[in-house]
Image (tube, rainbow, N blue to C red):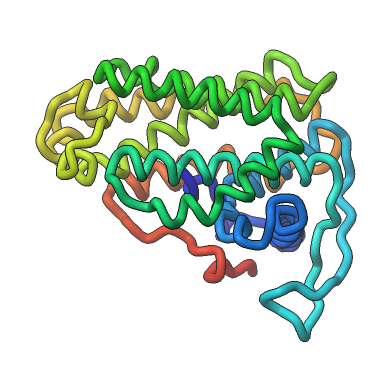
Amino acid sequence: MFGYIQPDIPYMYVKDGILYKAMYCGLCKSIGKNCGQRARFGLSYDMTFLSALLHNIRNVDVTIKKQHCILHPIVKRPIAQEDEITQVVACLNTFLTFYKLTDDVEDENMGRISRAVFKKGYKRAVKLYPQAGEIIKKQMAQLRRLEAENCGSLDRAADPFGCMIAELSDLVLKDSANEFTRGLCYGIGKWVYLIDALDDYDKDIKKGNYNPFYAAFSEKTRQEMMRKNGEELEFLFRSVFAQNAENLKNIRFYFNHDLTDNIILRGLPAATKRVICGCKEKVKPNKVRFR
């Protein structure tokens, strides 16, 4: 469930591109420091976005310094310095990567070696943030129960993942958390689950895995499902985006929030269009270019 939360780069300000890349690199370093070097392979843009969002809402400024990194040992790059939020998000990244790999093992009987590579990092993350680990474990178990009963309700199927992101945001935001931050993070989590399931529709059917869209509509191909139920799905995603926008308006940001606005208001709808039209290319971490 990684790789969908990305900025709409053509509409991104240069200043936000610099900040985004610096936070991406800073998160990478933090993962290596707290969860081990192997865990850095699980780094995702989803968590970079979450880090930017949480820093702004909690009024924690991001300090950027030019440093060397493992991929760029000669020329120094702008890198965000680690703080409490970066550390916890780094551990969340490792938690979610481990559970994603566990899901692959249970669904497709593959990825055991990859999961083993992340197990040590997962244990280190649990020691640092056991409460976060329990939240993820609880909601992933609930998700598994819904999958086992072949839940045909899209809202029910997406609820555990939405609740997981909402509860994790409460944990990190502490006194800055409120109904609007919780609602926004719930909506983003719900969207991630649904867009991932829609993207994997044909693959899940072929492999006999649970898919909420297939459980709801029972069409043999995603193309057929979209042809017959396109309006209902468009309404579903528009509702999520509208609720996200409403919650966003009621959240107090302490710094400029052009970056997170771009991702929430433009990036998520753009990714949805790519998945609906069947465009497979995702922006790769080493292929991102900011103008």
